[in-house]
Amino acid sequence: MVDTDNFTKVAEVGDIPEGEGEGYDVNGIEIAVFNTGDDYYAISNRCSHQRAPLCKAGDEKINAEDTWTGERGGLNAEACTVSCPWHLWEWDLETGEHEASGQRIGTFDCVVDGDDILVRI
Amino acid sequence: MESSVKRLDSDAEVPPEAFDDYIVDLDFHVNPLEDELLEYVDDERAYDKLTTEFGATPVMGKWDAAYGIKEGQEGLFTQGRAKYAEDVEEACEPLAIDEPIVNPGINNLNLQHHPVLKNAVCQAANDYMLDHFADEGMYTSMMIPKWDPDYAVAEIERVANENNIVAAYSWFDPKVPWGNERFDQVFEALVENDMPLLLHGSLAYWPQHSYIGDDMLTWTEVLGFDWPIHAMVTVVNMIMRGVFDKYPDLDVVIQEGGHWWVPFLRYRMDEFYEMHPEDVQITPRKMESGDRYLEKAPSEYLRENIYLCTQPFALPRNAGDAENLLDLSMAEDMFIYSSDWPHQTLDPATWFYTSRAFDDNTREQILNGNATEILDI
Image 1 (cartoon, rainbow over the protein chains, first blue to last red):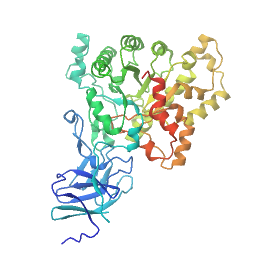
Image 2 (image 1 turned 90 degrees about the horizontal axis):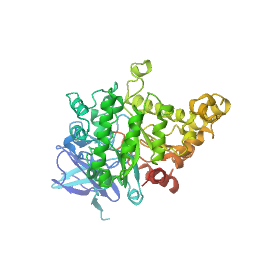
Image 3 (image 1 turned 45 degrees about the horizontal axis):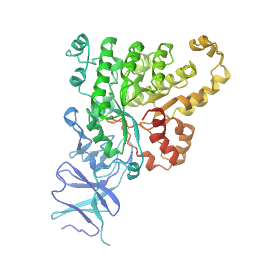
């Protein structure tokens, strides 16, 4: 039984495909919620480097078929990280840490309650 | 209290204020597929040789930026690959770029061996860009060969008057610097056609197989500092060798060569020149003109003839420090915004809205004022 006091519903199960993320504004705070397949993770939507929107990580590139990786940054479910769509800064979804710089961005508790995906800001 | 939750607008990647400003991006790379590019090669003999199994640009740089980048060579296509005008429009929309100045971005061409084949690629690139961009109403930088000034002039005469061709794109590198008199005919053609010379970093890095070159092992050294060193050398060489006394209307834009070195050059050039200026009279252009000195202090040529693309901006986090640095760097007169799309050092115009360092005038000058002053747009 999940104690959902102080949590806010942002989406329903199925809204965020496995391996992808979505961006939400919750009471004026931008967050990105990622679905690793095993869990959902909520992290600040803005990379601390240049404020790129992390929810765009994994978006298909323009003419992706003529590039090598096909996507702009993306979610690494195994490592539980997301790399920024602009400069590939890699953020730990659990700690919000960027290992190379030691910088941190906010992470938020994220739970599934029935069909609802909830975050605590 | 009722919570407010909304899904984020997926069409905007930069701050909303950016969409209210007119943003000119002076370094937007297009990457044609090689097969499609080579269809534009006019000379059959060159076409035959360029379509061997080695491809059009077989010589690789000694250093590989891929070592330093998470996705390896994908750094060249971190954002995607624009082949046609509609691709550029799609890329610019979420970044609030109103006026991309596109170039064919074949930055390893300068490194290749065979001048005739390189010229053929240059000709093909210009025709490809005319067909797919300039004729589609998109402002375009034509490419000119540094290795062959005669051919550079011929290409300028052939292409410069086409609609929407607004600049000439070439490279700074560790080879013959642009202050050399062999380039005078190029400068004359550019001034005559009222086009700025854009000098981008090339894949011809620090002299290869040299002591310093061999010991540069990281991307930070090679791309972060090798290019700015050659950019500085190029700028000082052009100023001290009297290029801008002979061609006062010539505008030169350094792309991806750094910009925070302006204070260093500005004060050091003036200090050194004013201390010992007697060798200027024996540089070739001054020998010809009979002038003894430069017409102005060296730093004045920086302000009047040199422009610097800002990508990657690397703005100090402290707004006061950043404001002082912008001022010392004559940013209001010299800096021009560039995104470098689609490369790994992409610079969307976020700094201008997330830092308090910019007053309205400085922001406008960097985002469009300096660019529109030198480009016929």
